Amino acid sequence: MNDMPAAPGATRRGSSKAAAVYEHLRAAIVQLELAPGVRIDKPAICARLGVSRQPLAEAVARLAEERLVRIEPQRGTFVTRIRISDVAAANFVRRSLEVATVEAVAAHVDDDLLQRLDRIVGRQDAARQAEDFEEFYRLDIRFHGALQDALAMDPVAEVVETSRAQLERARRLLLPNPSRITDTVREHLAIHAALRARDPTAAMTAMAAHLNGGMAHLQDFATRRPELFEA
Image 1 (cartoon, rainbow, N blue to C red):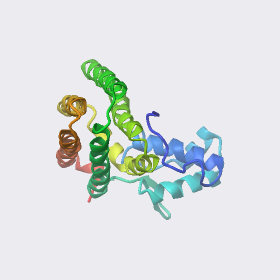
Image 2: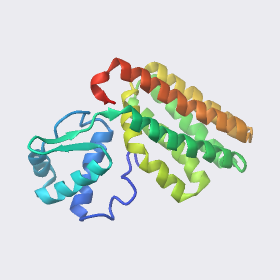
Image 3: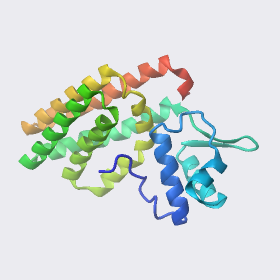
Image 4: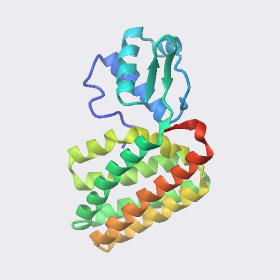
């Protein structure tokens, strides 16, 4: 799976140049290369990507629809601060669908999936010990992606993906947090154990606890770094 896939339809709307600019900016925002609240330097982006203002305007309009940027006439375009309410809504969607996913997958889990998940969690724990946060993050996406692959319902995977931007931006803020990283590995192991036992109820409980734990850590972080968030 790609580290930060574009939203569904990213290459089907607008020009190909606008789509490329959109994907570039969206990845930069979600990966926190463009921090919450920062002003977007449009001339610099046009120069860097070799595009005119029109593709950039189309890309910015799409990002505004996703509430990743805010356009202020006469002032400029700014990366939105993270809204806890948006993150909570995204987490609600993700939790609902991923809990249902593990319930369905547990009923017919095969050894190939179990081995794949085992490898991912093992590598993730190694990344934790090495404090390789980018690799840890990539492996986190792969773990959840493997479950969606096993479910094999593309519309479900697409809905999960559309809820990703606000949620992933917030989750990256937690990456240097040793407590959350350790908890994530432990929670992934609990999900894996429930699937290995072919226990749908335990798998649902473990997934819900995992996603709720991440939200609790984020809410605590927001109280300590309010400048990155808005109501």
